Amino acid sequence: SAVKQPLETKRFKNTGRRFVDGAAQTLVDRLMLIKVKTATGEKVEAPGEFVDPVQLQVVCQTLWEKLPPEKTEITKADIEKYANVEEALLDFYESCIRKAVAAVNRLDVPEAKQISEGLVRGWIEQKLITREGKRNMVFRERDETAGLSNLVIDELENSHLIRVEMRGGEPWYELSHDRFIPPIRESNRRFLLKQPY
Image 1 (cartoon, rainbow, N blue to C red):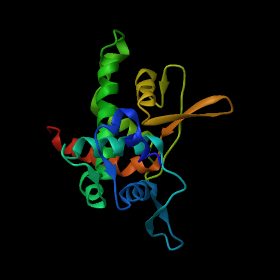
Image 2: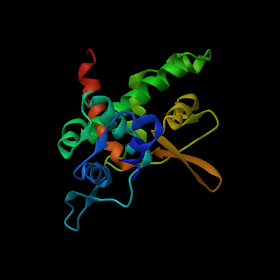
Image 3: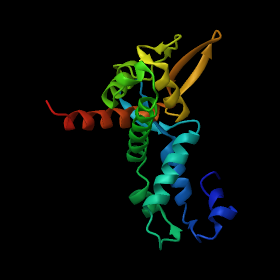
C-alpha cells in the first residue's frame, strides 16, 4: 500500500521501521473518513471512496517526524498518538498560508504589499467554505480570484491546499478536499484568539 511501500524503498529501508498489527490499515481507514448527512439531517463520519494523496503525505510525514527515533515497529497505538489527522491537516494549512504570504511578499509588485496572513485566512474561510460547511468554487479572473491576488492563488495551488477545475474552458478553484474544512475553521479560530484587539 502507499503507506507501507515507502518504508521498503532504498531511501527508508535502513531505518528498520515497519508497520505492524494492522497499523497501516488503521491510518488509511482514518484518512478515508468524511462527514456525511443522514436522512434525519444528522452529520456522521463514514468511509469515503478514496484517500486523498496530499492528506496521505501530510499525515505520514507528521507520523514520521513525531515518532521517537528509536521506534522501529509502528503500531496502532503509535497511529493514535502520533498521527492525529485533524492536527496534521491543521499544521499543513498553517504552513501553506505562511509560505504563500512569504512568497508573495518577497515579490517586488504593488499588490504583494497588501497581503497578510489574516487576509488569506479570511479569504479561504469566506470564499471557499459555505456557511453550511461545504466546499465552494470561485472563478479565476485575469488578476484576482474572488478579490484575492492571483499571485497568492498560484502559491496556494502549488502547495495543493486548493485545486483548479476547468469548467467550460474556464478555471475555477476549490479546496483540495472536504476534510480540510474543520481544521481550517479551527486554525482560523485559534489565529483570531491570538490577535490583539
